[in-house]
Image 1 (cartoon, one colour):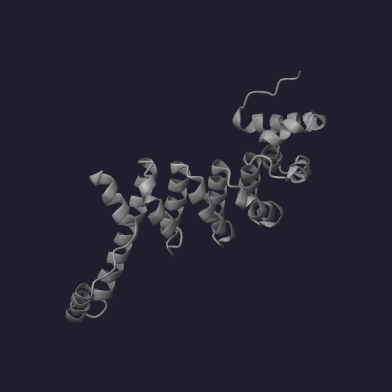
Image 2: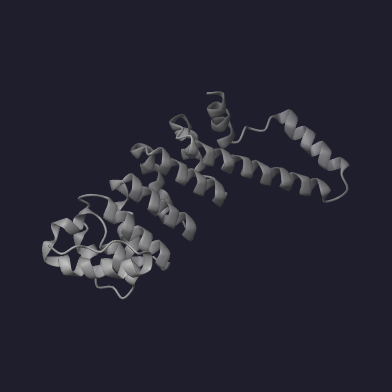
Length: 214
């Protein structure tokens, strides 16, 4: 419990007390020009590293008590902190917290969009379907596009069967494979051969077992 409490405290930065701020300003004034700024920047980097490590630990510990702080960390300006918070929310597996990830699907950072798409897919966040659809149809990054399509396939009864059928014929084999995933395919027996062909494409890449005919 003590370890968990420490993790939760470290995810969110402690407010800097006035006395601490005064001490830092005084230190900067005593240092040769520029050195105080360097030390301050180094302090900031270490703080970000500490927060990122704490966010990662929360996921490893499956610490539900850390979810409020992880959700706050999603609004950080630091990419690493955001990514670790997203991954930990996914590992903890809380659907309600998963809905807090949806705004990150519109983040300008490709890695954040991709990681978030993977997380909302695993958590089956229905509120993410509209944004995932937009990513599939319009994202310029192919890896993000594939992650979004794969995520949609994991969300049951999402009403996007037409999108999957469209991408079963896409020239990108990874998009075809992503379109072939998920429970939707079982509801489309007339498209079984399309699905089988897409899965064969995937087999060539990852060595997955073949789809049996029957």
